[in-house]
Amino acid sequence: MIVNRVANPEANMHTSGSISFATHHSRLEKEPKRPPTFQEVFDKTHKKKRTDQYISDRAREVAESYSQQMTEKYAEEEKQPQLDPETSAFTTAGAPGTSPSEMMGFIRDEISGLESRLAKTMESRLAQTMESRLVHMIQTQVSDAIQAQLSQALSQVVSQALS
Image (cartoon, rainbow, N blue to C red; front, side, top):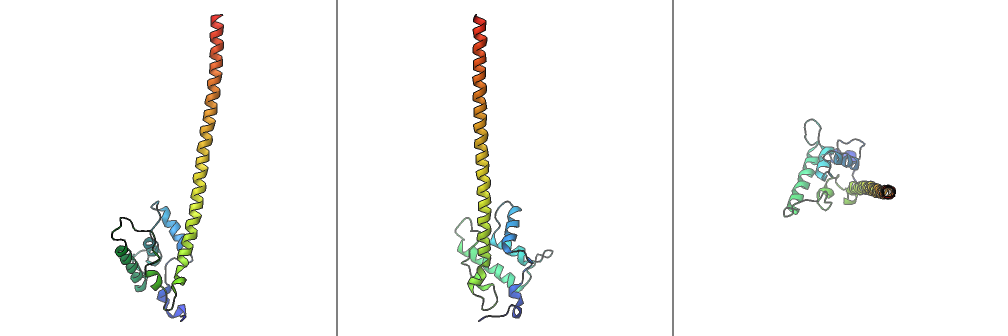
């Protein structure tokens, strides 16, 4: 059954405007210098800025449900994963009749964003490694050249002194 979005506006409310969930995720990642959790991104996109209140009862229910499920599922583990798409928050967040696959747009954006950031990080680290190796190689060559010149000059001075 397909339901018009306008018929259930609360199911589609968020505060992020035209900015994607993945973009919010990237921006939040820069603040604490670590990847934000799904809960942090969800809160950023579903809470009013000044009051820190969820924009709808439905948004609050989804956030609470996700948090509770993550706590129950990973209670024994020291660290929870950043995202667990198997929680029912992903299958119940949309309007009635919304299929779970329709809720996975975020995950596709997230994976794409992660791949992009990973590629940039790998490229940056490769450049740093290459630069470090090049600097070391140049330093070694300069040091060897100076040592050879000093050795030759010292030999000449000793030869002249002995003559």
